[in-house]
Image 1: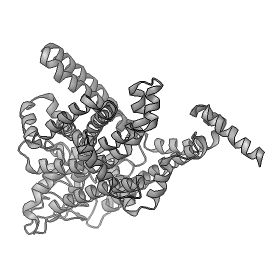
Image 2: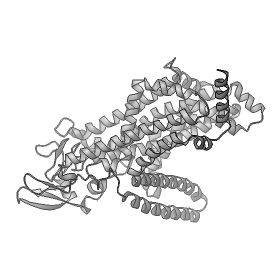
Image 3: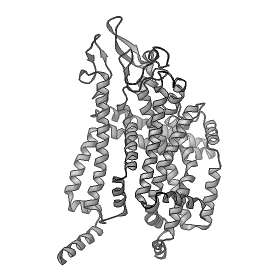
Image 4: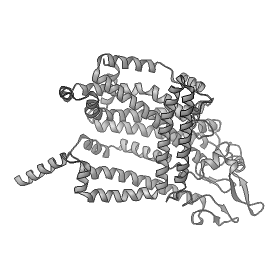
Length: 515
């Protein structure tokens, strides 16, 4: 017994004194087994992964150069033009690399499992579709495989954390273990996680999920042709996608409707039906999900960074720093957000920034710079609470730098609360983006880029007709996404503090009123 205890003590001491790389080298089998399958999953969609990584790099480059250009332009227009030139050259280079990456064949690409084809006769068979299947069946196979792939990637990612916990982590137990265990039995949180995974997959794999492409069906319909069997002539005809859209409108009048899960007269399958201009609603919706989640993620990332820095600094230093932060947050909160959006839209009209992410970048900046006070108030209470703990005083007495103390001893305690309120705030941004696109008039995402709010606006006059799908389906997507985000936040809150479901709200109130 004594030997077993000694051996366990020695093993823990060895874990504490070694790096992660050394621990993996000493016991490589679990990590190698997990990594082999993980690399296989990446290889199946290598082109898509590389394209996504390049898109993130391009977004970071645009965001950084945009902020620098705005500030430098105030003092030196020539330097501002140089920055813009560099940004455009770098973005063009990254676009070329991304186009090459998108051209790489992947398991779930449209080229591997095509669904766009045409009949060769009144009763078929179909040409240019996967295994000669009907477009609806080929599309359903591809969409199902996409979601199965995403589900397995998520499961295997969680499996990676389990492998790290069981074989390579220093501590035998951390509070995070209890949080994960509670989430496993929290049905409401699991619903939220499932919704977030579904919509994240929709955004990431939007080009593969759609029955057609945005470029062909929405952005440049008169630059692409399609073939279809004409029952009148009895032959296969060719028509521009734009002309096919014109004859496939859904306007709720008689035959002017292509509803969900139906074909139009040109052999194109529409899972959600068509819009009032004949464009495919499913393609419009999945790309709208990508736009909404991308802008929301950028805005929330900016707001979270500012909120964390402000909350940690105000809680650590208190006094004048805390007072200045309170006054700044109150000042920003007092600015009407819609008025600010109108001012920004007018000020940057014609500016190159207005075209970044089809107007989404400016919206992300506005939402991020005006949304951080709400997050700051939510996490200020927990930050003040942890700043009074004995280990913070001990770190100060040992001469540890304030930045190190805040990062190592305060940040891990505050981050879960940021996750709770951040997930809920994302839902508010999604609703705001949809509202702006619904209003139009230069606000929201620039047309013809898909946006959920614009689809609802297009279909609002047809809700009581046979073209009800135009407004109802995008509206339901918004409701489901926001509900799922709120469920995810509620679940995280309950998992962190299971004794009191209202504890997070109490701390948020304390953060907003404490001095």
